[in-house]
Image (cartoon, rainbow over all chains, first blue to last red; front, side):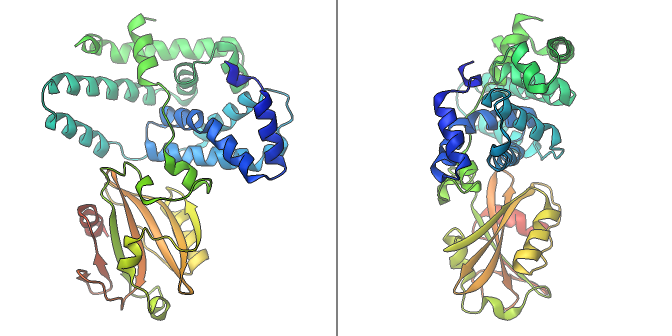
Length: 189
Length: 172
């Protein structure tokens, strides 16, 4: 993961932010917005909540730039901020109505509507099952599958051992396997 | 773990692009009307809400709330607060605009934040919401505002430009 390294461009951005340069804040935002939003969305399962989490993360990032001492990589530090924001965010928003919209869109679509409906059902169930995981397991799953982090990197972000990461991931896989096994055939429709 | 589950997780949890609205909310990108969530399909409702007791009647004199809403409720001087917490939004509006705004919970309606804009020297409170899949905006106006097409009610008047506004109004 090259993102985990403190690259020259990151170093310049950090220094620019510390000097209060607006262009540096904007560039930092452009660099990390997708990663931060993706983690927030996959953790929360809700676009509006993800926006709140991402906003909180960036505000924290911008306001605490002086606190970054380089003990860990800048990427790890950013990951920690978004993970903490996810875990702190206790609110959940409605999901039923947007899902109903999705179903209506499929019903209106010509052709292989059944395939689309089943696919959407599948997608909803997979994400729904992830959202039901305990927060500690869910964040490991998101870092693993949304960001593609290895066990060692996840351990650094969460401040725990690799064994703990492996254990949480194993328990998450077992829970997801139990909850989703009945859908196994649908993905091949 | 099965390959099937591994594959599904990688596919369903894949990263996504952040919405343009995130930059707007952080003040790092200019606000444009089309940047509202799911803008192409969104029902951009503009609801004009006139509150009877809590807002001084003279404050909106000379303003056309309907025109203001149609322009995207942005002024030359805008302060903005983003939160999905109705209590926090109401407290912010109380502090920044001196207005008590009821934000009742309703199915399909979710507060996303508030703004206070300056128009003609007046502070105009604005509440932003997500109504179903669309975005909605409430411009808080005094009870005497003359709004074309508004539903006149005992304590306030409501006007909506699109159907999401209908849903919103019926929940208030």
